[in-house]
Image (cartoon, rainbow, N blue to C red):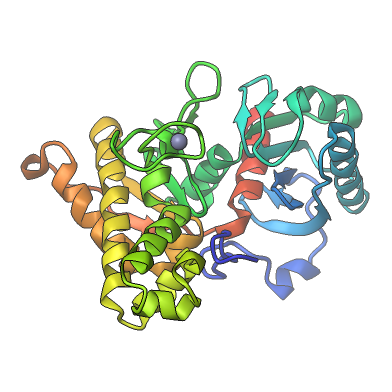
Length: 343
Ligand SMILES: [Zn+2]
């Protein structure tokens, strides 16, 4: 597991079954859904209660390439969980990529070869259960707004800062997806048209300026400029500098690495400032692997949010806080959306 992957959830923030709860027979009236998170390397599934508690889990590797193999892998985890929990009410899937809502058609996915995959229909036909399919970051935002760092908030922005930057918007108590489900791609809003190229083909996206990949790239540039410096020596050569290594050097107090974090946080705050200006959220939640770097990232991000948000002297700015559900957010959110859709 890379440090850029979402961290394991905090015990404190995640509702978990105690040994005493687990010993109780399940309440047959309690509504539960299977939440599924399709990642680049694994398909993580769980049985999730209406309170956001994960009571069981199943995991399979994501098959490479062919869509039929992905569907059978998903059916296998669903069947495994349904055998142990025959009363589940619904299925929710969070998938990376461009996912149409409410049709649940995956137009494009970054880690898979399939295109235009009508996943919602296929899973419904295979299982007979009400199914929803949403973008994984939307599902994660919903989970954090209901069961995580923003529990109970109807106005929340989530940014997941890892290898890339994803995110989701919960506005007026609903996930905001735009007209076709493709909205809320906060990582690809342009923050600097003169900035770095983004993997999406554009230039100066928030992701290109403030993600873990951006940190690694900035670290390599800094090491090339100072081949005898701490970063280059730690890495064994300027071209070998990674975001993780910049973090390590920053923790050791290396001034160059700390400056790189300040720059990263600056750009993140520029993005957050615009989101706050447009949506006026109650709070901004930051998830993804980089949130583990704590105030190295969040302090400069808060400072630049304050600098760029509109109407600073006339308003209270929202807190910028770490996410709580970690790698479980997509699964919990997908299940919660499925239960919600089912009434
Ligand atoms: Zn982009």
